Amino acid sequence: MLSTGCFPAHYTYGGIPMMQKISIFTLLLLGMFAGMVGAETYTWVDSSGTVNFTEDISQVPKKYLKKVRVRGDMSPAAPDAIESSAESPAAADTASHAPVAEKAPVERSVKQEILYGNRSGKSWKADFDTLRAEIGATDDQIAELNSRLGDTSKMSRTDYLSIQSSIRNYQFRRGELEKNLNALNELASRAGVPGEFR
Image (cartoon, rainbow, N blue to C red; front, side):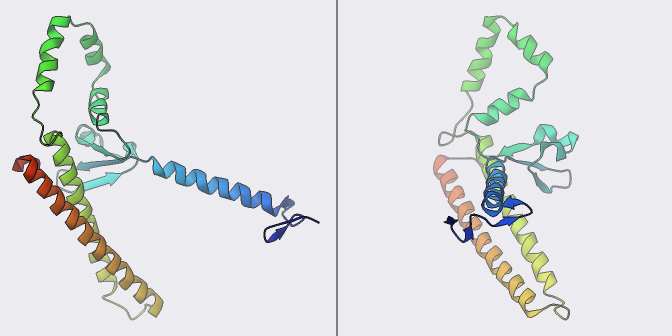
């Protein structure tokens, strides 16, 4: 009788060989993680100044769709492509029928955009906003965990230690984010990025 690993070849569960079940489970698990890897994050700031995040564009309120920023596995040229795809089809159709002479000034105005360290001001601002939003979200998580530690009378020792460990992890993460923000600020200073893009 052949044996593979810790399960002999003849072991079954529910009429299906155990190795086949493990293989199917592993493939499903890998498929789930593969879907998460390419996920893009959409961020926007609402009217009260709160920065919101989601991975599903349909969750973004319609009035903020024009101001949404896309973060994730995108090349540097992709944000421009997203902005142009957000234009109405009628505008794109009109632009395709415009004479060549009218397109030349538009191309010049795009080239005249000021770059700071080979990046546009919008790109710098997006990076600063993202880091600040992550710091704010981390602060909120730390505050929520600290509030849970306020009443430990109904909490087990394991829960208490787990929350303390989570707080330490979030505080470490916040420190790393602060370092990243300071490094980005230093890079922006060297590149001459004005305050409006920070």
